[in-house]
Image (cartoon, rainbow, N blue to C red):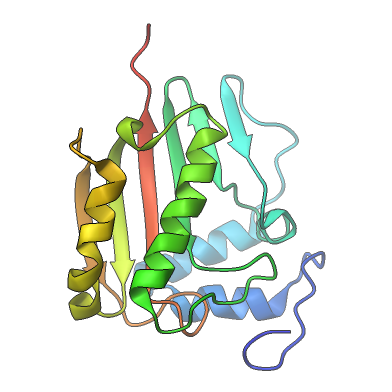
Length: 179
C-alpha cells in the first residue's frame, strides 16, 4: 500500500502507481528519459563484459526496467539510492540524517556485491529536497569516506523525489584500479 493508499503491484509490467511517481518526480529533461525507458523493449541478455545488479527492490526493478548497479570492466555505476523499504515505502519520513544513514548502508551493501567499498567511489551525486537539512548531516557523509580518498561530488536541491517524504537520493560511480 502506498502513502496515498494506492495498492502497488510490483509484478505488473504496467505498474501505473510507480510510473506516476517516476514521472511526477522527474525534472523536465528526466521525463523524456524516464518515459523512454518505460517504453523500451526488454533486452534478452546483458552486453558482453557487463554485470547487472538486481536485488532488494527486484520486482520494482524488473517491472520498471532498471538495475541497481551495472559493472563494465573496472567501473560500477549505482542507481540513485533513496530511503525506501522493500515495499518501496519511505523510511524515516522527513528525517534527512536518518535517511542518509539508510542510503549509505544500502550503497555499502551494493558496493560489497561487487567486492568494492567507499574507497572505490570516484563520483557521488546527491539530490536533496532541503539543502539546510543536508548541512547538518554532512559530518555523517564525511565518516563514510574517512580520511579519503574522496570522490568528486555534486549536490542538487530538487523539489521532490520519487516517493513523498524522501529528502535525499544518492548515486555513485566506483572504480577498481586494475591489478
